[in-house]
Amino acid sequence: MSEMANKTHLHKNDWSRTIFIDTGKIQTTQFNLTTEEIQDLVQRGKEYTVKYFDWRKTDEKLSLLPS
View (tube, rainbow, N blue to C red):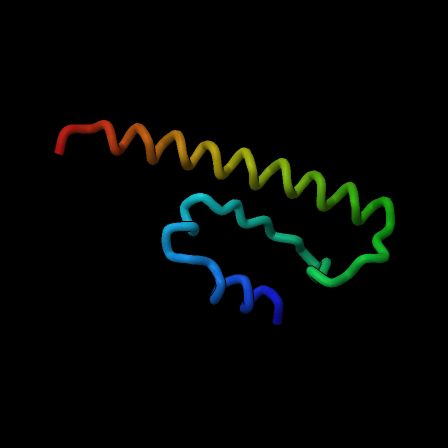
């Protein structure tokens, strides 16, 4: 439910500046996490952040190409 709320509240210009992180089986309102679940979320956060910046680098390079 909250995932849909985020989608409807993001302005169209914000999509390219937003890092989306797949939380796996963990819900956005799940707060009592085990150490393993926390470590998994941290790892996922790192992974998706790297993917985002790799994408941004590619996007910036493409914008520098002559049209």
